[in-house]
Image (cartoon, rainbow, N blue to C red; front, side, top):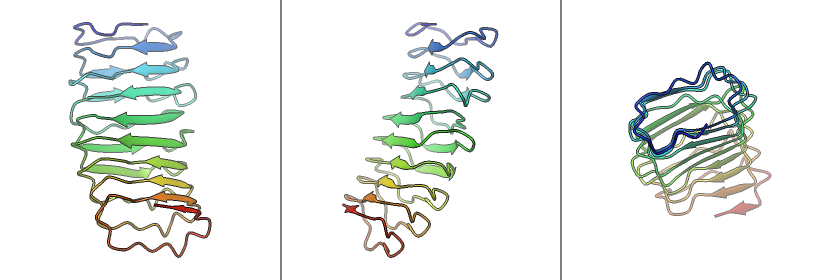
Length: 193
């Protein structure tokens, strides 16, 4: 279904159980509820400054692509599959719940207003890209025990604890304000920036 770039303020697709692609980007919708649409593989809600609620419950086995760009200041609870990308949004806080999802890569880059990032419910993430978010001063990675690639350059980090991330092979912490970092638990580390 392609309903992008209209003046929609609401959309109800819950009865469309065969829906596999939904483009509602560029509208004025506040809430998108696609819970239970078990065949949905692509959802584009980008360009919606009004988006405050996104319900993706029950589609963890099918959703491969989710696009959220320029959404309203809010927190999202995302249960999905594939790669999660959040770029150049106006979010101030992001609280991700990815337990039970097969997502391996998180890409949260270039978000000038993002101050808070909760990754406590993302234990299966192996690649984390949190780059160029100038207001991110702390990053708790303790729950990401499977993490093997970390790209956290261009933030405002003053310290980081990597003691629980023993699988890390690649770490990029350049362009932050970190004075020192303990790498003693990173036996697999082969690339440090």
